Image (tube, rainbow over all chains, first blue to last red; front, side):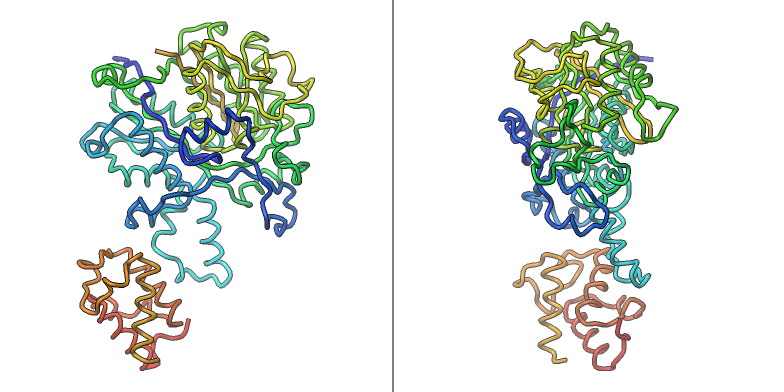
Length: 408
Length: 88
C-alpha cells in the first residue's frame, strides 16, 4: 500500500498560560508556573490536593450560539485551538467542507463540569425534566471531536481517542496513519481536558496527586525531583494540522516537522502502575517505525507528571533505551498535567523548541531524585540544533504512546 | 400574574437562554424564522420557562402550536390563569 509522508503544518493551543501558542511559549520561556491554589476545593471531603493549572476561556462569543450551546469548557478550548491551527496552517476555513479533511480529538471523558452539573440537576430528585437539550452533547466522550467537526464543518473522518493521558498523542498517531494511508488529505489532531475537583479527585483517591504544596503552588509538580509528591491537573487543548507532504509543498505551507514514527501499546500488567518494560517497547517500536536508532534523537519530551512511580519508571525506560546521551525535559512543572491534552500541547511546545534550537528545562527539578538519575536531565536552558524529537505519553489504563518528529 | 410580568419574564428567558437582543423580542416575532431557534432550543425553552414560572409544561400538547413570541405569552398566561401546568 502507498505510504504518504505526513507533516505538521499548523498548531493551536489554549493552555493555562493563555489562549494561543505564543502565550504558552512565553510562559515556558519565562520559567513561570501556571499552577495556583484552588479556592473552595477544601469543601470536598478527603480531597488532599488543592492546586491546579486552569485556563481562561476568552472570546467564546465568537463561536455562534447555535454551535456553542453543545460545547462544555473542553470543547470551547478545542474549537479555538483547532481554528488557530487551521489559520496557522494557512488553510482557508471556507474551503474546509470541500476538503478530504477530518479530525481526531481525544480526551479522558466528556466535559467534567457538564457531567457534574448534569448529575447535580438530575440526581437529588431523580428528575430529568430540568436537563436541557445540550447537556448530553457536552457530556459525551467524543464531545470535543464532534464539536470541532461541527464548528469547522469537517466532513471527513471524525474520531475521538479516549486513552486518558495518552489521548491526544493517540489522536495524532491515528491522524498520522490516516494521512499516511491516503484515507484523508488533512487531519486536525489533538486533545482536550478540563480541570475539575472531581478530576483531581480521581487521581487523589489513588494518592497520585501533589498534596504537599497547597500553600506553595508554584513549587509543584516537580517532575523527576527528589521532593516530587504527585501530579497537578491542568486544562486546555492542543491541536495540530497534519497533511500530506506533497500537498504542503504544493501550497508552499510552512512545515514544522514530519512525523516519522509512532507507536502505542498496552502494558498488559496493571491499570495504574506504569511499567518500564512496556515503555521501552513502545519507544523502541516508535524508533523502528521512524527507521532510526536511539542516538539520532536530539530531545525527549517526557511524560513525567511527578508521580513517584511514573517518573521513576519513565526515567529507567529512557535510560535503558538512550542511556544518558539525549536531553530530557518535562513541561508539567509549567502547566501541570493537562491529561488528554498534554500530548498535543507538549508536542506543540517541543516543535517550537525545535524551531528555536533551544530546550526548556524541567521546572521545579532542583534535586534529581536518585531513582530518576542516569538520564540527561535538562535543568537549565540548553541551546542545541534539534533535528529529531521523541514525545512520550503514558496513561492510566496501562496505555503508552510515543511519537517521533523530524525537522524537514 | 399580570400580562406585563409574563412578557417581562418570558423575554428574559429569550435574552438569557438564547442570547437574543431585547429589540428583537417583538410579539409577532416567529421564534424559528425570526429568532433563530430550532427544535433542540424548544427543549431548552421548556426547561427555562418551567424554572422561571414554576410550572410543569413538558407534556403540554399546546407547546407544539407555538410559533410566535405572542404564542408563548399566551401559552404561559393560559397555564398560569387556569392553574394548570402543575407546579414543578
